[in-house]
Length: 97
Image (cartoon, rainbow, N blue to C red; front, side):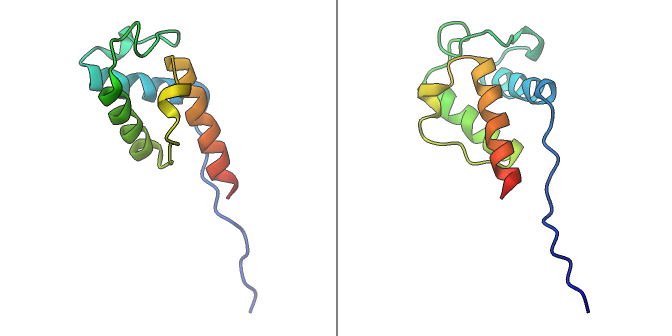
C-alpha cells in the first residue's frame, strides 16, 4: 500500500483579488463604499481609522484569509497597498507550510 505524501497547498489569490477583499473589509469597518477605497489611501490619515478600527480590520483579514497577522501590523500597514502586500506575504508563507 502506497501512502500519498503530497501536501495540500491552497491557491494564493492574485494581488487584485486580495486588494478587492482588503478594500471591502476596510470599507465595511469604516462605513464607506468599497469602490471609494484606493490602494494609496492611508488608513489613519485618509480613511480616519483609529487603533480599534485597525485591530478589527486585522481580525477580519485573519478570518477572511485564514492567516495570522502579527501584532506589529498597525505599525507596518499604513496604506491599503501595504495591507494588501502584507496579506499576500502571509498567504505565501502559510502556503509553504
